[in-house]
Length: 306
Ligand SMILES: Nc1ncnc2c1ncn2[C@@H]1O[C@H](COP(=O)(O)OP(=O)(O)OP(=O)(O)O)[C@@H](O)[C@H]1O
Ligand SMILES: [Mg+2]
Image (cartoon, rainbow, N blue to C red; front, side):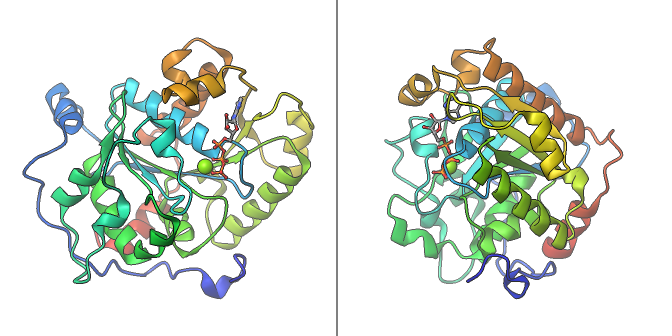
């Protein structure tokens, strides 16, 4: 399918076909922690953050893992879904290789999604991020249908302060379905020409989907030492402001080898400081004080009916 083909875009009013149980009898330890601290969410559901790049290898997963970890370190309850269903990297980035269950275990032919099953399938990172891992075999990715994913999103967004989605570098029905209801889309781009081109294409697609610019933030990441285009030129080319510019960090590979995101191992380093700019952006939005349009919330209601 051509990703840009509008007839393949899932209709906004696609309704989740599966039921979700009542409250989980075993809330996650992290969620209990938040309740004990008396944190009140302004919204009955948490904030859905979709991290995406039209080009592979630019650092989407690294950015997603660091943002989620920083949010968790800041005291929020955070869930992540590895939506890179064929070649997901969160298992590696969080050193969760030993966790035996992944997202494809949640597919049942009767279309029923059990909250406890979702919680039971999730692994927990060192910083307390609850992670729903990608299947260990690429050919299992088709088991995760858009309807299954809707049920998972609905549960996790209601149970956690933040739901961070690490997306693959291509658009399919599942990825577009997440973008439609995301409160924040973090578009990751490197400063290489082809990445900037793909970012431009993605921005146009989001516009054609009716996603408001206010819900999109551009994150420049430098996965290689050589910088191609300065941020100002990229902003001019894209006619879109850069929220944060994450520098090349030579210790990144060591952090990945250790399975500990840089915001944990180098919290005061330049990379982590810029990640915190992104976290502040997402956090400010969650407080509801930015006057942002409520389109995703309205779409969320249309799709999920609550
Ligand atoms: N700021 C950075 N400094 C140094 N290395 C980086 C940085 N960002 C990313 N990298 C490196 O780039 C590589 C790709 O990162 P990552 O896996 O996050 O990309 P991706 O966009 O998610 O790729 P994919 O399309 O395969 O999902 C990693 O090996 C990582 O070490
Ligand atoms: Mg990735």
